[in-house]
Image (cartoon, rainbow, N blue to C red):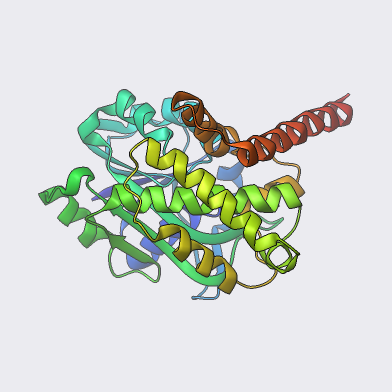
Length: 313
C-alpha cells in the first residue's frame, strides 16, 4: 500500500516516521523549506519510545506521481483549504483519506471534495514539537492513532489499512465506533484548550485554584450540551471521565493551543470553539463561558497580527 502523509511536522512526521521504520511505503508531502530540512538532516524522531532517523521519500505539491492508496491528513485546521488543493493531484478514484485533524468541522469539507466513501474517520493523541533543527521531539509515552469506517462498516479496505498500520512503535487502533471517539476527543480538547488559553495557565494550576474544578466542570457541561443538541453520540458518563482524566495529568500539562499562543502562532479557535458557537446559535443554546473563551482568542489574534505587522514593517 502506497501511503502519502500530508506534512512532516510533529504529528505527520512522527506517525509517518514510525511507518517508515516498520518498512512501509511512505512518502511525505511537504513545503519546499521543509523538504530542504529533510534532505539535509533526514527525518529525525527523538522519542521516549525510541529514536529513529531516516531519509524519507518526499514530494511537493508541484511534483508528479501516481495516486496513493492511503493519505494521512495531518495538517492544522487552518491549513485545510490549501492542503486540499495540494493533495488533489495525488488522489485517485480509490484513494482513502484518513484525517487526523482536531474537531469535526473538516469532515464535510473533505467528503464534499473527495467523495463520501473516500473519507474515513480518524483522530490522534500525541504531544510532540519541532525543535530549531526541525527534529521531532516526543517526550510523553502517548502516541495513538484511532481510525475506522463510519457507521460501523466492516470493509475489506479497513482490514487492509489495519494490517498496514499495525506493528509499529506507535499505536494504531481500529475502532468500530469512530464517530463517538472523535466527538469524545473533540469534547476533551475543546474544554482543555478553552480553560488553558483563557487562564494562561497549565491544568494543575486551574484545578488547584479556588473554584477551578467547578469552572472546568461547567465548561465541560456547556460544551457537551451543544454537542448533544447536535445529536453527537456522547457516552452518558464522558464528562465525568474527562474530568477524572484531567485531574490525573501532570501539573504542568498544557493544551497545544496554549503552546501555540505562547509561541505567537495562529490557533485553531475558529475550528474548535467557533464551530461549537455556530452550533449553539443554531440550536438556541446559551454558551456564556464559551463566548468568553472565543473572545479571548479573537483578542489574541488581533494582538498577534499587529505584532507580526510591526516586525515586518
